[in-house]
Image 1 (cartoon, helix red, strand yellow):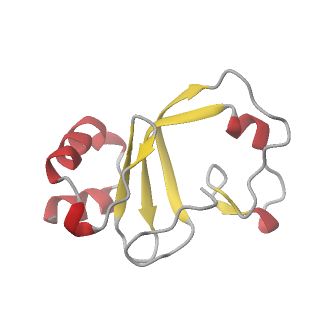
Image 2 (cartoon, helix red, strand yellow):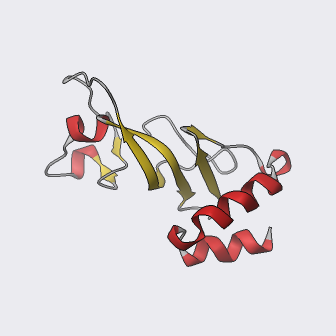
Length: 116
């Protein structure tokens, strides 16, 4: 999450919502977020406490990234964030994603998704 920015407006950081995650087999104790912790939704320097080892023990399988500036959203499907510019987005795949996870997607995202 430290390196992901919105491909359209270049905003950093992006909001993360996790729908499905799986445990990793091994975690390096030295792994830490450098700038931004998506699980705690804050810049590292402003957070009082983080649980980096716990966070890094999970692989995000399905989820959602939301740009707080322009409101665009990007699906995470099978561990891969699909962060394409608007003209390259696969609307059919996005519709399937919304149908699968719609009950966990924030209403403001569903509203913009239905207009796309």
